[in-house]
Length: 148
Image (cartoon, rainbow, N blue to C red; front, side, top):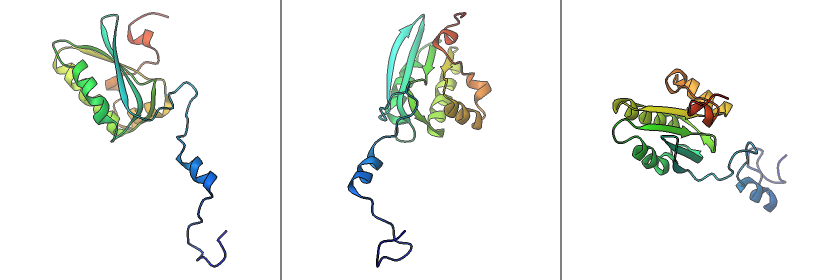
């Protein structure tokens, strides 16, 4: 439908309510963080450095979380778990970041585990042909080698 006097292909302006709704972040899975700002939280669990990636891990977000992964993958024989469960969005830029972290860990004689239970993120990893390399698991217990 077009406004009276407007060309057929002219965009129809949104009313104020629709404009405000268009600016609202789309919340995903109820268990996911609605925070879209990329950030990393690092802590230690069972001999591993755990790096949780929160928010949108995309071309804009990798520069925010990259330093935390670099720190976790430095040193001799790093033991790292990357937890993608709090991640709201993940694209090929994030996959590149994981590949870099994996390479750094391998070069230093360490080990890296990936925790991910999101089908869309797993699909991105699969599309990049990195599923067999990164070997994601669904839970922190699996990453720690706990039997459940």
